[in-house]
Length: 202
Image 1: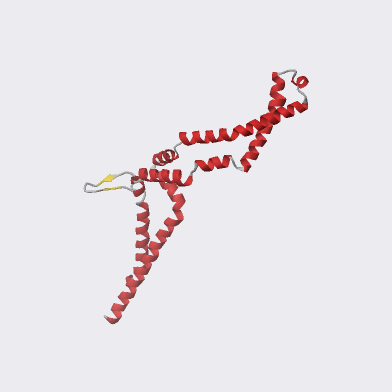
Image 2: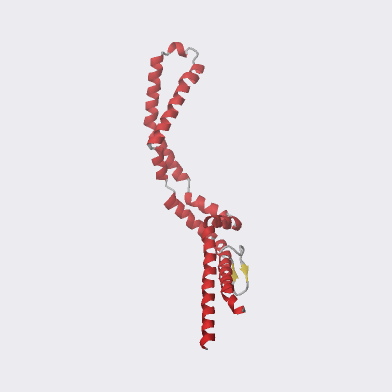
């Protein structure tokens, strides 16, 4: 009757084999020297390379300073900037000037205030694109996205890196484990069928 446990044992072996293979992606976290060779989990061993590659992908493929410039000049951003400008100019004209110039209300009439506000608003609108463009260029010069991402990833502890990758690929790892069990079960069933065939015709 022990022969009939072959498929179960083969399925268990397949599952354990794939489970250990996945674990060996992350363990051992520190290099273990065994004399003729050494062992270490693939991800801890290649963490620096992974950090460099990920930094390049983010900098070249996922993050674009041109996207930031486009967002600055988009219609929705322009509308928001105009709203903020109106609020700030209103606050400047009605609060700060009144505090700085006590006779402000007597010296400047309402229509004059509106003209001043419109003139200032127009000037701000004219110079704003240049300010935003220069500021975005300065950000691009000062911020190295590749270096930031690479240094952050390389600084991760092995346990944190494992937790991050598991959170991303948990379903895929489970699928690999199940595939190992299914393939083991199929191989065990084939072996059992062959044994039955040999016993029947042997």
